[in-house]
Image 1 (cartoon, rainbow, N blue to C red):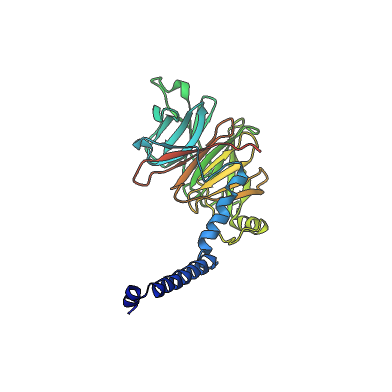
Image 2 (cartoon, one colour):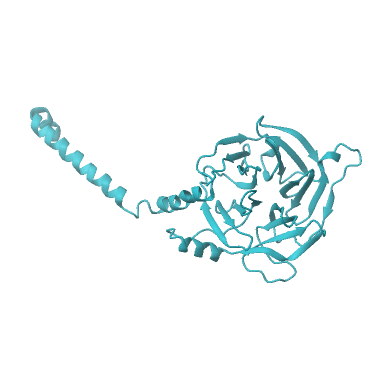
Length: 315
């Protein structure tokens, strides 16, 4: 019927088209203005926009570096020297020195048997690699060519139930910082939430009192105080830790929940950012260059692992 009118009456045709366009426009405006329609998307944006507040644009990395297939399961990351990062694979007892400018492995060091290695820290020429059960393997990078090369092990009271996933370094105390993904309790110290422990390198001693503590409730309270909508967030489970070379603040990254949390050394939350899951596929490693540039690594998930570089935005 309408088709006949279009053929016989041009004015009627224009009127009907005009009516349809107005109706469609009203519908589109109504949908886009409906807060329930975009509630989840807006909640994600409210977190992502906070990325600028940590002095990094976490939405736009300056570089994406694809890794060799040996690092498909990259789990730990540390700065070694200009353009060279140290990486570990969570299945192999090997340390890889990776040149980010040439995008290739320049050295591959076997230091132990296969195992769940989760964090690495380079201090001078000393390499420290932590396994998920809390054992810390260490050796001098300059001596790895010797026939009698053997990584030594620092024992801690941590175990597989703690599921250690992050290793950092505090220059001020000369201590390794150890992040537990799961159970934070050590020697029945009744810790609620998550804990960061320290290993004093000067005294070769594990400190049973946590270096700092945080909790899921603290995160929710922080977001509520900051006026961020939808303060309910997935429980934070650290997968990487690093100290900022300029501010001294502690950066914790989590693959579970895709988030970055920044704390001071008293454990006070300074910032929380929800990461874009498309950009950060499975973030497990984090480190900083001396100038403040930040690197975050992600596992490949049946593909090539990769590292994202973020420029330090000085304020």
